[in-house]
Image 1 (cartoon, rainbow, N blue to C red):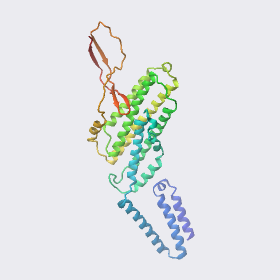
Image 2: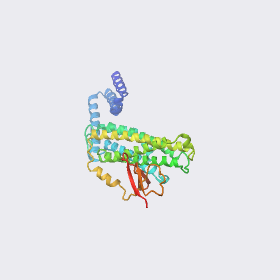
Image 3: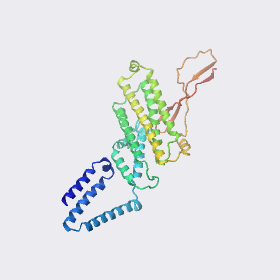
Length: 363
């Protein structure tokens, strides 16, 4: 009898080392070892092993049934819904920091500007919730065979974005704030556009997951605007060599710091695109509804009530002779300056605009 107990307990203990068993059945195997050892040893002493085993198993089944009835019908607690809300909350924290925390003048007084740091430590919680959700029956909007693994992929990419935002935050406050030069202002303007549009893209992803709909065209617009700002920044840097950059005022280290921040922002944009791909895959597997009226709703609410449009020539300004009464100015793009609440002025340059001319009459 003792040898049988030893072999069974040792075998069950060894099975716990398998990753699949450890991940989903570890608790059940542990209960089996304890119950088997207790029942076997007690039965060996009192010689009523079958009756005692029946009592132990009945007690376990009654306790499990009571827990399930309370958790499902009386006070529902769904791990799947908690995982869904946790992923949405993490993405919203990153979007809030990009839209309000980084680059804002009053970042020191924002009480939740560093909430993105809590995203870095959610891996264990997400895996635990996904494991529990795998056991749950279909409920609410979460049917059978819901793609819980896809939430883990989204969470992993979200943590990558959070780590890059941490680097961005360190670059922002690693040096004292000084007066910016002309080149620094040009780079910072592009970075501010990239930051704002990336934050809005993350907000669109979180909103689509919350409403269980597919990504709308507003997300693509924000991604295109951020890529446009990144291309503009690359074109600005291509015009200057290192000697020219150092000679336009300010130290080279300060300019390199701004460029490093722009590089981190570019990586964040790439991760946001990866995040959108995972979100689209989740929407496809979970059969989220299409955003039929969502585009119109977002378009109405994203437009500010009042905008001041200023047409700027993106080329060079050349003097015009006084004896000329008709001037034709070629315009290669229109920069729209918008007043955003709490963000100051931002510039939007619509991509792929055709070249046209403005005809002005002098005098």
